[in-house]
Image (cartoon, rainbow, N blue to C red; front, side, top):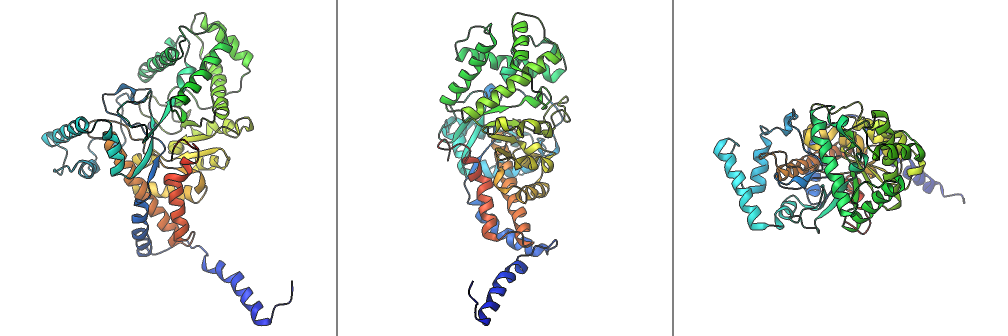
Amino acid sequence: MKQLPRFLSGLVVLTLFAPSSWTQSRPLVSPEKVQEIYSRLLPEIEKIPIFDHHAHPGFPDDPDVDAMASPPGSAPLRERDSNPELVAAAKALFNYPYNDLAGEHAKWLVQKKAELKKQQGTAYFSNLLDKLNIEQGVANRAMMADYLDRKRFAWVFFADAFLWPFNNEKERARNGDEAVYIPLQEKMLRRWMEQENVKQLPAGFDEYLKFITQTLEDNQKKGGIAMKFEVAYFRSLRFGDPSSEQAEAIYKKQVAGGVPTEPEYRTFQDFVFRYLIREGGRLRLPVHIHTAVGIGDYFNISESNVMNLENVLRDPRYASTVFVLIHGGYPLEREAIWLASVKNVYMDSSLMEVVMYPAAFKDSLRQWLETFPDKITFGTDSFPYNDALGAEESYWLGVQTGRTGLAAALAEMVATGEVSEAKALAMAHAYLHDTAVSLYPGKVH
Ligand SMILES: [Zn+2]
């Protein structure tokens, strides 16, 4: 390099060293400063059209809204029908004229929704998305509903039923929740068999696997963009690695009758699960997995620990499968984000924004944004819980918490000098829309 004139080399030194001192981050900032940045960011964030990566849109009387039912259990504080935020939701979505949801007032709301449903038909849920500035959203449902506009809702189907083809009497008897869930899995498997014109379970294991593949391919042709597992509701998320011979021997024995022992069933399921995720890679069909606490009294939190999936997620055999950890491993989301260091693993924050209030959610989201901001996606987990907290209100809760929590997390990051405001808005676009959409090229926008 040629010798620079003395005054110029001084400039070079300045430009090399000055910016790093200007952008050095600091641990403390004044709340006023954060508030000021938040007020600038929030309106910009509200303008970003959302892609909702996980939701169960539907009316409360629609049995296809999920592949399973929720047993009455203890709902966390924010999901109870006593949540005063639901009044704000009703006002925002339906011009609700009252300030509480008591007695006659609640009836007004039920009636209003029924009227709109009748008037608007297939536009009912699309209009809801418009109100919340959601461009498109996932409908994770047993089957698609004809009242959901396919231009706005992309189907994510359930793949768990293939894990339950045998006599399930022992599984059902484990507790009251399984007594509800398992028959619904059996029903789902019968529906896939009907769809594929398979009258009874094939005698050969190879044909059973072919039936699985055929179902995945046909669901993809019907518009399915991903497969979803809610397997944590039934068994541990730690999957062993049995050989196909082991799985085949169990299949052949059980398909002929009898009740599998628990280790037999687990070994068979370990193999079929791995078969399904491998097919997900081959078919470019991302794999969504419920990783979080679950409803009901018997959901086993330690068995469903998201870290139990680590052996599968870090297995190079599945490098071409895209995994989305639905609900972000909550309440272990701070550990779980490190699983997104794997190039084909993504996080979804749905449920987190409904269980957590914005004040708590922004701290979790900030840690995600500071770790792998390019691997995190937004979802509402909208679901028709009850009359007061319907799919409508849970869309609203998820979106409000998502946008305000995001603005608050980013405002802190800008105020502490971690990122510029422009970078913060780019991160907001990625989280609310771009990253999720990039996982389904040509299928969603
Ligand atoms: Zn869900």
